[in-house]
Length: 124
Image (cartoon, rainbow, N blue to C red; front, side, top):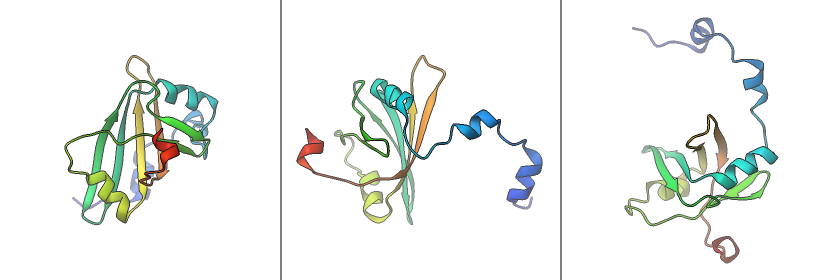
């Protein structure tokens, strides 16, 4: 079977609803910040030439801090020490975050760039 093209997909699937298209924003807005204050779980996707990785991250509600409408921060908690995500950021800073909210019929995606920091102010 040949690979499908973008044009093939456009023929197979209807376009997303206007409300879905309007939901893609360049910055966080107040309701996003309210959801992020409740967040206790996210999936962090990253990659480099060697491959892709998705890693679970979690903590008590509020473990994700909104620094401003274009930046969020969260601590790297102890894990299995494979540090694949951190190694990915050394080579390629692109990321995707998927926040899930148990009990709510909502999710939040953030796509952007990440960096590793040991800034004392962020670590507080």
